[in-house]
Amino acid sequence: MSDRPDQELVSLVIPVFNERDSLLPLAAEIAAAVTDLPVRCEVLFIDDGSTDGSWEVIRELAAADPRVRGLRFRRNFGKAAALQAGFCQACGWAVLTLDADLQDDPKEVPHFLAAVKAGFDVVSGWKKVRHDPWHKVFPSRVFNRLVSWVTGVRLHDHNCGFKAYRAEVLAEVRLYGELHRFVPVLAAGRGFKVGELVIRHRPRQFGRSKYGMRRFTKGFLDLISVQFLTGFGDRPQHFLGRAGVLPIGMGGLGLLVIVVNWLMRAADPKAGIEPMGQVVTAIVSVGLLLFGAQLVITGLLAELIVDRGPADEDPYAIIESTSPGVDPR
Image (cartoon, rainbow, N blue to C red):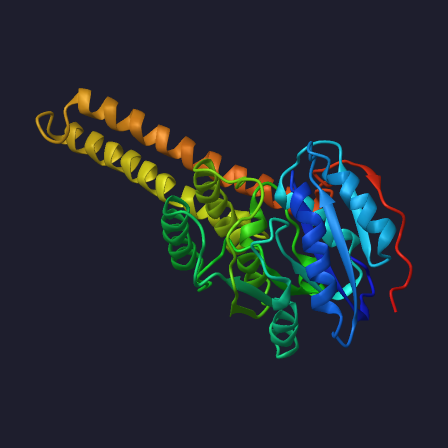
């Protein structure tokens, strides 16, 4: 992300993975949609390791339109990496993301910008009427409700790829893995204002969906990660240390019981716990103490990593890019 976003420029970031047939009509629709905008527009296509000739089409678009730029990955690194690469290259005060499969309608761009100007830092699209098969729609709705319930960020469609951001948001939120669907949650965790916009969803015209049932398993695991990052990302000891207090307390209580029992049996050999019970209690108590101590120590190490650790490198490799576009005034 540019250190000084251009206040007269809007950036569109579009991840591409084997969408050759849809790129030309998408570029034409974008050109028509942004013609009447009061600001300039740049379009960044991020080729995420396509093998169907998508990069050749992107190069043609960049050569024909100075507003278009392209980046090409060495291999497929995933949508989050493609978006992160686009965010790093975007220069506009507002950044919009949309999919390259033509299911997102570029005519919604002015509506997103109006919502951002109205005071929202993040605006997420809501495909209220979806043109996808039921086996995609139903699990997606279950997942969206789960994310809203767990995180407290109430959105109908966390998975929607059509979103708008102020540049300040993307300067503070970094994507990796499969975290692209959780940007509103990560932004809300940083104190940004998140909103939602009902958008038009269109049937797929070319190719096939890149998402299967595996994404929901990944999404659930990422939800756990996001909840940790937003709640304890900068204070991991509060999570790990808190988890370690309970076993330490239980272990200490168990050892206290053994001491009391030893004193009782010293006075009356028939009182208290039998020797075998004392051995079991001692083993369990020591195990709980060690487990709790490990959690606390791990929390301390995590605090040191957060405080002193170097920034992670970007999880992608760019092998080619189109030449920088001229000022599209």
